[in-house]
Image (cartoon, rainbow, N blue to C red; front, side):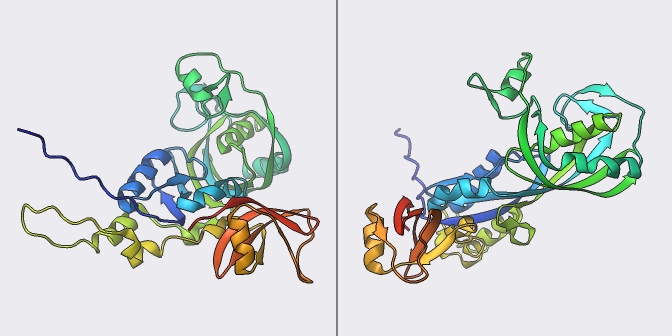
Length: 325
């Protein structure tokens, strides 16, 4: 008997950003897989991986928003994290094996006295269990295979590092605002060393990535509930029809406009004729008293729609990426 051919699920043209509140003990890729089952998008990706033991802000780019991912990843990030003193691990967090212990517990005054040393442009050696590539291989893959991984220090930006509270002598809770490439786990490790002890991250929550913060976050449970509310009853044994997420108002309300990611760029409105030229990849001369001269990067809109982003030089706009939604 011939096997019944399984009907292929349709894909939908979802465009924009969703700010997921990633739950504990879920990888960023697993979270992405669950979102695919909810939205069935034509294209989707995330901007900045969160470890399984971390929660919070995971920006998700659907469709045309994937073209703007670098602008989000390059944005500032804010983390709230708990450091437990007295243990250093292989991963610099609670997931790893202990490699060093100490009976020293720093006081509040001792902690606050050194925080300024970890602000500004500083050198940081990333954890060996990280996604950094070494000779084409991920550092964490090499470390897991038992290889001796050596990572070079690199310059990072820490804009703010505050001590929030010390629940007891063993733990301290911090909030850090930092730039791209900063490892909070490494901050905890280095703080411990500077304070004459050792430490590792035992809780981590990301509060902000670029333009996306806590007030915009939505959970997987909330998204599933919105999808379930749209399900249509069917007869027993009959296949349930697939729900179009574009017709689900509750789901689509969680999607932010594509241009949200371009928050640091100037917006410029152009005519429909100019937009037609830009969509074909052509440059245009910018006219008007308020038109930028450059050099700078801007994005252009027409009729309320995002057309492109690109470079302005000597009053001429050259599109870098064009949007098709």
